[in-house]
Length: 334
Image (cartoon, rainbow, N blue to C red):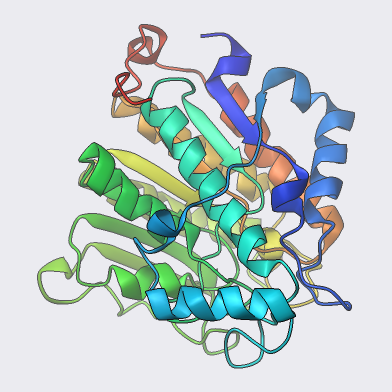
């Protein structure tokens, strides 16, 4: 594989428009600052770029209720009101903007499954707080949840790992699959006693037959790279034991020091370390399938640095011998 074929990155105004106006922390400039930094570093020469894709109603209803989708459509026309309890305002065109996020994540997954790339990154994605019936925490539609359902329904992939290093617990993904033993969930986040959404305690390990398939690792405010490096190896060992067939990695940069909404003190070096570790694990399992999603982050310099480290890890981590022979997956997928 050429380096540009190993990793694809989705870039385009359609996903860049997913952002809230009037000084909202999740503004519309995050994609631009990331890609400008990526070009400054020359990373754009080592990846293939992909155009955003619009999700259909049939895609969205894999995870969300029709009533909720209809509500977002209505408020998208008026730009008035909230889509949750006060964090996620509607704006004109929000339905299409959020649908492009989901469609782009699905398109990246399809490219991986078709063997057109080994790894992919969708910067404006990883909207992990949305629930089937409502928005939450700046997240209108839950693109990881839609991707998980599509992997199963379209490709028969059962054991899927979802890893999340955003400062906020990925509650929308966790509770949707809390009783599913084949969704392997690993989330390292600021302790929910100190930060929205207040969930993700260490004793939340799945329900019923899924007990033990989920790993929540709360981090104390002020946790730095050294602290993270001590708790990360057990997470890798846990993932290795589970042998997932596909990895989804949410790489929110609000865990980096200086974010205005959180109190963790990681650096972008942790984002490189985690992404490298997940890619190496996927390669060791023979399939190499890694879909990375941008997630949160409200300090634009941190967004640019953190996501560039994610892309660098996706590009620089060697492909296994199996991957060099084209063993990425189902090449019959269109």
